[in-house]
Image (cartoon, chains in turn red, yellow):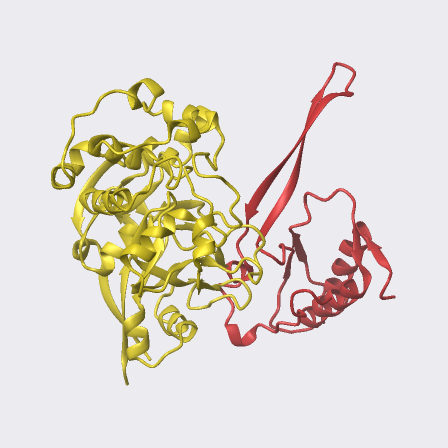
Length: 129
Length: 340
């Protein structure tokens, strides 16, 4: 299990199912931060833990609906940028590779409405997984 | 209970310029008087601010350098970013390291001769230890919406995406209750901040990546647009002039041992000091020319002025900063206290 990876659509479906099935009534989950990904393999062990967390929150009577937000763990990411010039046949005629550094807000920006005492941080230290 | 004093420029509009987050400056002496470690001081102050903030602890007894290699009195020794009282445990706090440089180190970073000549007993700080920090590229701390970048001289709200430049000398002047300029960064400073010197632990660029005389921007005529419209709080020009003059009088040569920024070149020209024109790279000349510092202009004869005359006429002589006004820092800074 630890070495397996989950397909992106399957990851999304697992979260939707956990939100729908673990509470007394079906609950919606809004998934953000994966919109740019067309295909990806997600770490399976963590997928299971996240699915469990979604189910845990969905089971709370006070919870009406859920949000799942994926952000970079390290809030400065260097990205490769691929610039493609396409010809009339839709084929790439020339391409340029560049980089761009992005500064991202950390998790606090998404948790301003949550009392710190109610945040259960289950992440391992940076470098462990 | 003891109280920890701090200075704050609050988030919001300030005389037509946007302060994108709360800017907090803390005197290291006040931290020590409270018996606090710097990180605990940041945490105590962060608890008093229910919004994004960039926080710096400043040791006025230390020394540091500007991006163009001018040694100045005072240094930022710790930096933090907070949001609604929280400081991110991994990325919200960073320490600058005291540099026990030898004469060999100073051969590689010759602008530091000014430190040895003028401030031999003061501790030198520049940036953090790049081997230890968790954020890979910039010397930045981030918590939530707040980012405090470039070793605490550029602060941003990453959600509104607005930022402000806070060059070191302006911060030091606020700590001394002096005068500062508040304006737009403009084209001259946008170009000037690219004229860096090689520093292993540089506040902006570490690992001695650029030789003196080169530009860290390397973006031709676009360099002048880099920070043009961004607000800036910086030092009054006579203070800047005084430090540049001190460096030149210690034997520093623009383009060879200190950066050839427009401000440095201007003061050198009026003092009739040597400039290493041959060591300034083609890319740096291109950026300088885009703001009027063409080779022709730089080789023109300037009237010889004394140091005193340059300092007195600094506002008129030294270019940089647009649409600015001069303020007593006490008129833009609030003195506040945190329980400690």
